[in-house]
Image 1 (cartoon, one colour):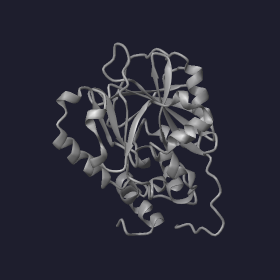
Image 2: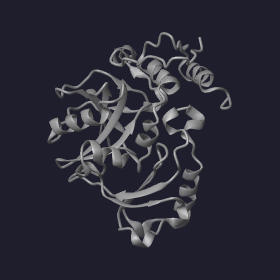
Image 3: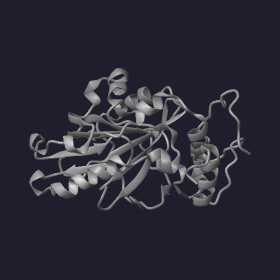
Length: 284
């Protein structure tokens, strides 16, 4: 099926995974509209913004280089990675997709043979091919090495994901203890906990303290998102220092289940889709 035209493939794939028929003429839920964006919202800049190396120039231009994590190196192929020159702690990322991360807390314990095998697997990944997420189409596979981030008193730093609609952050997804407990919850911009969660993540029952300089985080997300109908802007807050993570245009490929399900529609109402470009057909 991956050889089908994108608009046909997305309809079939979406119905297969969600059980919901997709009407491009009348997308209703948030997930519906994410599928629509894949097929009809094709701005060239999206290729740059999902590239974890190329996006750095955009962040520098819009909000300043002070929000960028320290970059050690960029590599065109795994054989270029010089582990001896890297510090004891670092992070490797594939720039051309998602879930391509290797967190190294102690280089002396790193199995170089397994690591090189993993990095070579990364280079074969094509995230456009399977989900038809247009922004990832033809993004050049590369690897970057960045500074390892740590926060006092925590094994894993919190990930603050701002859901932004036409440049306006509406709510935040907070992921905690990733790779271990995988806890998650949602807050609005007044730091009130929202009554929904998503599948495959354990809902955090407690209350989180608002991070330092929270209004600055909102400002950064707003500036980075202002030119797009929807984008999720991921930020870190390391003891008050705000750092950029990534920009995501199709969270979970637009197939995330919301609990309760009504929030799929509530969030979808935030997303005002642009007009379909003239001459571009719609599959009914």
